[in-house]
Image 1 (cartoon, rainbow, N blue to C red):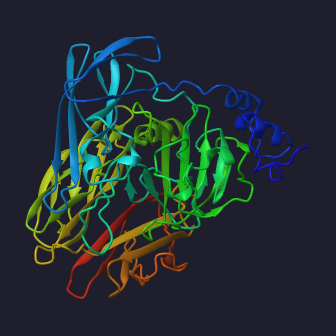
Image 2: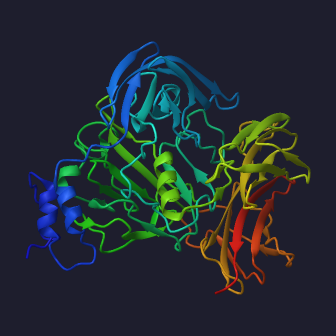
Image 3: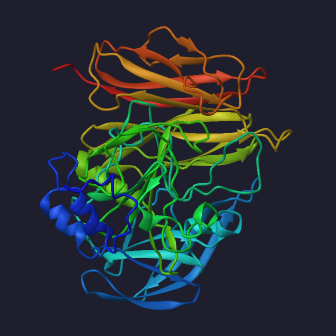
Length: 521
């Protein structure tokens, strides 16, 4: 039998066939025979079709079902904030077979229907101006993606949610959201190209979203996928999108797409380069290692060849949402994820219109704000007069009486110190699925930009508040950076948990969690 550890520095012509030869053991990580055949064959053709366009340009495309369409980019409008000049919204007007539609790029938007197709816009050129062009590999004005009407976005069953937890369990940073973090407000913007899924450090399992070949594990990489030119080679160029790091795993699936899993606290020993693993295999534990900023999350990103010929991100939000929906079949999901970033005295628009009902029957959108006032409707406008980080409650109710909650994060700067971020806070809990009465739940919190005072938990059940103290992100990689406490609920229900920490000047950061507890079986 050939051992992959012995041959890991060999240079076979076909790395997938080589991997199969190396993995013909009784190892539980082996793929099924169909998966082996699928992975060793030529890459599958994805269902999505991707086209990059300049304003005014039109192209003919053949969709995955043989349908031919003409696509033209008519207009691009990008809106930047006055603080960082970061793109906060990018909208394109596209004509498909003579029908016009306006799409907003990324920002938790899903594909929409027009002229017998589904279409979305994953990125526009403004994100290159003060961001990182190599992330997307976009040379023209905008990138749009198309599928036949009513087609799945990916081959059914070919992708699952990559963490063992509930959707929107805690903070997320998804496709092309600007990241507002650190101490000082900087002109260079990190626009998020992947999907940051927050979670409880060292507790949430990270799992393989697809059947795949392990291309890299930590700094151990299959030679065929080493970046030409070594570590100094320009990211996104050349023969590979793989950028290894000791907290990172790369997988490659039958579509020829690469999947990056970053900030892992631990990578399982069995995840070794050259092995073929099944969808659902545990890769490791979610953490905050690497360039995480000190908050615990999985950075999940799909890389593929783009129309420019460069490697770039294959926007993943719509794919993950489809996978989660098929896997867990939620009836109702509240969604007010887009973050607001403004100066005190300015307005924020809070939007819950992207909330989901499996029966398309949302009847009520109810808002409760930090000052105790309320409002109703899918979208509301609020003025924020004081600096801080606010977490505003959205409750959605469908026709059957199902309810769900989400929280709008609003980051407000002090006009007298416009170069400084307000203090921030991250909270998480575990487990997020299957919580029962009389069973302890772990809660973790960490503050950022504030080492004064304590974090104070209100668990939403009338129990006494609990005070803890994190390190305030004094050392990003500190093992005990998060303050940990436990709480047990005595009754079933939907609990809205709040945790706050205030600076000496009274500026407060607030985070909220929605914990669902059921009767123990």
